Amino acid sequence: MNSNIFQKNCDLFSTKNSELSKAIENASASGNIALNANKETIIFHHDQYLLQPQAPQAEAIARCNKIPNKDRYLEVIIVEGLTSLYFAAYLIKKIHTPIIFYEPDLALLKQIAMNIDLSEIVSASNVHFAFDEEQLVSLIQLHHHHESAPEVYALPYYQKIFPESICIISK
Image (cartoon, rainbow, N blue to C red; front, side, top):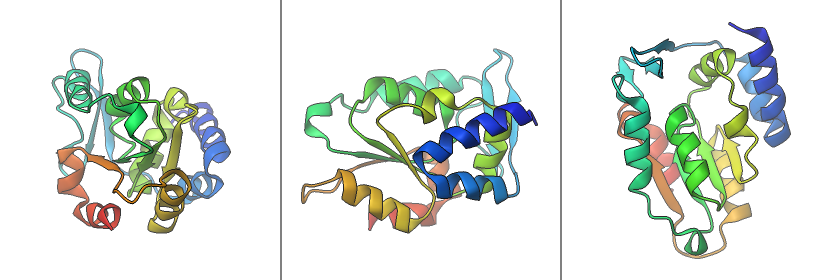
């Protein structure tokens, strides 16, 4: 663990969601972080890689490119899982409407916050964070004003690992 990175990440999270910052600090860490042969970060949790281990950046770019760039039509996008870091980073560069990252696993988020500088993602002005249903609903109500459902994206690995959170987001 790099305590400087962890403290920096917690400080950044506290500017967006003080409850999340406190919850991360109090959580136990779990999950594994490593580098592949190309020195790309790979994350392994619950017997699953969160992105393809051989080419996580390429997969993230490909998945992000499938999302239409329709900022002017979208009020808010909900993404299940902040811990797919490459996907989050590319999405933030592509979409300028509010993005709500819903992270159901605080232990995994703590492991990542202890080891990876998240400042580029957390400090983006259009990014918001929720870790429970109440926060998610509150953020949706704040940013979504149409009767149509907001856009929701979940990577397949998250759908396998956290199927219950898809039910929460779908409500």
